[in-house]
Length: 346
Image: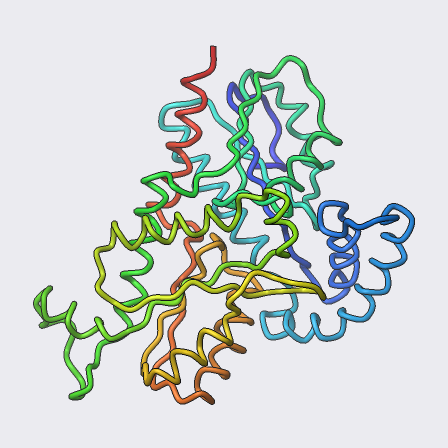
């Protein structure tokens, strides 16, 4: 991990957006986010970006602090990413002399801090691994751009993993979590059933009326129109998960977390819930398909705000799939990616 010294033959850098670790960190975190040139990009943006970021972060800080207060005052993504890094390092050390670092885009450990630690480790091979399975200029692209600004070391052989949206071990980790989410639906229209005594076929029948709602983080439509592959990769991830899972449930793909004016990918989550409610769907499992760690978008937007919206719309049961976090299957998928890259190195 970042704070430990010593060399390692293979260095792995996990990229994540990060989150404020205290109420005082909320506004500077938001400032870092909205001053990102890969997020705020328009004509004359170089001149307007800093004052605009200060204005937006100041206006949004109060409401954001309320969200984080309900999560203990800060984002859990920092601790969860640390646990992912520790688990991945332990998995890799079964076969490699490896060390895993965390580079957060908008809060500590910031990319500059991590770049210094990686340089000191003097690894022979360096694998850049985003915790964004689907590539977008606004996430993976931004993290890689910041890395290039902060790090230069000609000695290391650098391998970059752009995405893994269709990587079979990752898809299997998603399917496992969807099944875990479906396991929360233990009653059918006829009343309670003891899940411990259900045969597999009966269990499947009990949950086939549950609508699967895949919810991805939204991005502006103009980003997609300029060639960002994010939407197509999200759609492929969903198709592969459905094929691998073999469920017969009705399903939808929608988008959440829009954070500004203009056109954003649709349908929005609220629109999808309205459509399902109008179709008399009673039970919903929301699957945060673009998120591998629990943070404000899952714990607040989905577990709290979307749940309240769904209950007002008349749903009988509303559940959210657990994020992948440090599930062993997901960690093994990340390790597989790293091992594949290192073994390809000349």
